[in-house]
Image 1 (cartoon, protein in one colour):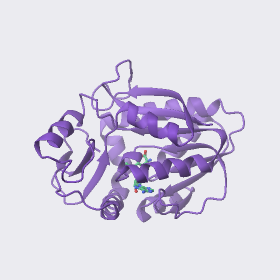
Image 2: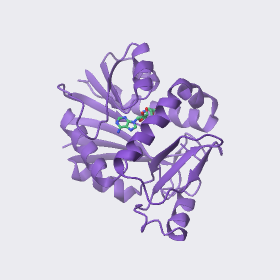
Image 3: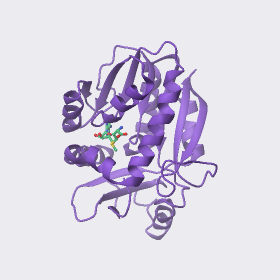
Image 4: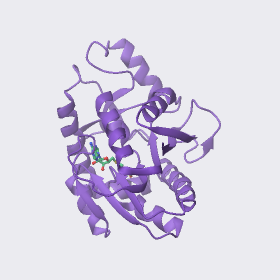
Length: 264
Ligand SMILES: C[S@@+](CC[C@H](N)C(=O)[O-])C[C@H]1O[C@@H](n2cnc3c(N)ncnc32)[C@H](O)[C@@H]1O
């Protein structure tokens, strides 16, 4: 994720096929797994953002009287799930899903159940139904709108009726993040003709080779996707990321967007 000049944008033309983007993302996060938690702790903006979103989620989870099972999609190392559970003081079962073998290994080492595979293609057999689902710092890693629709439909299917989905995304209209640069590049580099959607960006850590992908969203784009997948919006919060990290902001053109949505 672009934070503190630690990452840079890479323009790839044409946009690689979805399958190749998936492989790039998997390789990138396999390489990240060993340092992922310390990266989140050592970059102040990242630490403050994550702590604030964890707190928002824990407060909502505490209000679910029947919270027994929680699914975390693209859970990474599972650290946030453990921290969030601790913050709630509640006892519930956590199931993690992640495409990266190394991330799943880290989550299992924390004592969590972790299933390896890509979420959006339904490759993972989930028999349970859940009272809440987390999809944190990861939904934008899906390469195209078909994958995003499929990921949300599967999330909806895995939730009990009335269950809550917590999902955060990068905000294309955040003037303190890469949004303005992404819009400029989209026009200047004729990226639509190269297969990009507005909001798509490839990036890497400065000085490193592995390239990953993410998509920046508008509020309307994300709200429409959630509604089409059978969710009602409960709340959308703008939480500072590039600046005022962790602060819940009044401005829609700042911060990441945190969506809390209920399965109809
Ligand atoms: C930025 S990390 C976020 C981890 C964790 N949710 C958090 O908030 O710290 C993104 C995670 O998404 C996982 N991921 C990426 N694409 C995925 C997919 N299609 N299905 C499942 N996991 C995926 C990566 O392996 C990585 O662990």
